[in-house]
Length: 228
Image 1: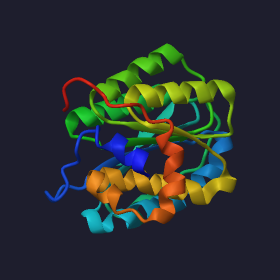
Image 2 (image 1 turned 135 degrees about the vertical axis):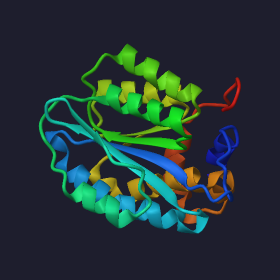
Image 3 (image 1 turned 90 degrees about the horizontal axis):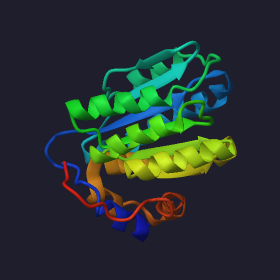
Image 4 (image 1 turned 135 degrees about the horizontal axis):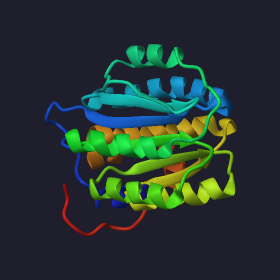
């Protein structure tokens, strides 16, 4: 937890206490193999909203890709029930990854209004890695860290997600559905940062320190250059 807080201290401050909700873009791979993880994600969004209620709340936009070139994103929502209803109406379909579209969407949204964090959940990469890296670097320049949660451990995907996390100023964490409790704690920590910044993270209970440590060893050192 101490390492995570030191890292957060180098990140742009969230405008806490101004009445502005933190904004978190939650992107999920919804191709055919992902249905169990999609179902889990539906449940975990509730925990993320609950953890941020005392901080002024969270606005979340869900984006996903599936099928033959299908990509969709919800409006920015602050009602967990509304988001859950939208998610429950989606089923996973076979198709190739569209991570570039996720990153492009995150860049476009951040240029409109500050997005405090991108969370991506997926298991594969089927795209040009250099092109993805370029977009992740642009996201990093906009001070929107990407937190890449990788299911399954496929080696090339692991290397790619690590690099995208590094370039965006975020973190990479592998997981499987057997570690759902740890995933909930990790996503909660990201949501708390997006909603309340470093002060809110400092108040997280010590019981969550073990899960958060899975993030800290991947986070890069202090960034240089202008802050947005």
